[in-house]
Image 1: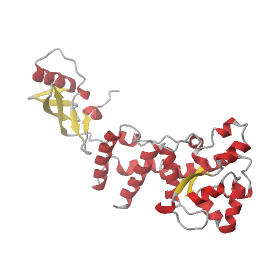
Image 2 (image 1 turned 180 degrees about the vertical axis):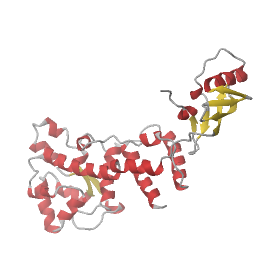
Image 3 (image 1 turned 90 degrees about the vertical axis):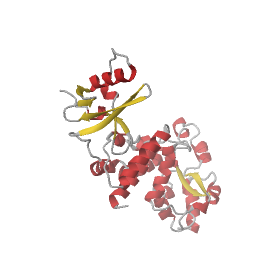
Image 4 (image 1 turned 60 degrees about the vertical axis):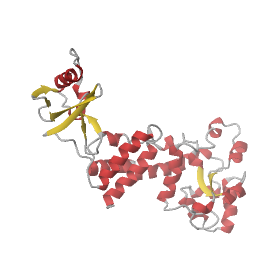
Length: 304
């Protein structure tokens, strides 16, 4: 792939995750995206502007990040993976080696659960944010076990004895380094807000800031002139016609008709029933450049 195609793939991948595009109706999304990606591979443009709106993400501020705490949630997983991607691979806390598939990683509470429960037992707001994704990162299981119920500053200072470069590990995991000195031991919410800001900057960099560039590079408005083949199905029968984009008329069965009049006539010819009233813009279809069936409503000119 060329550089623009690579940019599109990255944007599509991360946007699909943070827009939760595949959380429901995934079969339809798979078909649509397979067609889109096939066209991108062939250096073709996307004429369906609605495709880009379907990639609109649901996180618009650092505060939104604090609402994700369930491991099964796609955005929760996406945040942890985006940190890994942006750092070009997470590194261990015990040493500076890069973590890999065989590292037996665990989803670790940066502020241990038991520490929070004991330290802030009367603060309902803090207790509700124990599992927040901003308080999570991926580290090997053995390290997680050693951490136990200790305060962040305590267990990090112990780790510093075996890894003098622990600061680099924290930066790699997008964790504010002041945590080592105990700056956040008594200020859990402040820690969450600080890390959420850092995470949001990644989301801005890889998704939000890329949106307009991707649209400019890959969107091409539908044709405004010329004729296209159209079709419709009624009573399990198919009928074909020609649509003049400029005049907004349909050439059907030797006649030039309005969109809806042509639809009514087609229905009569297929079923023998008259007195029908049809919205022709949602009756006639065409095949777009992404090989998708679309209603000709895409070409409808709104009268002012």
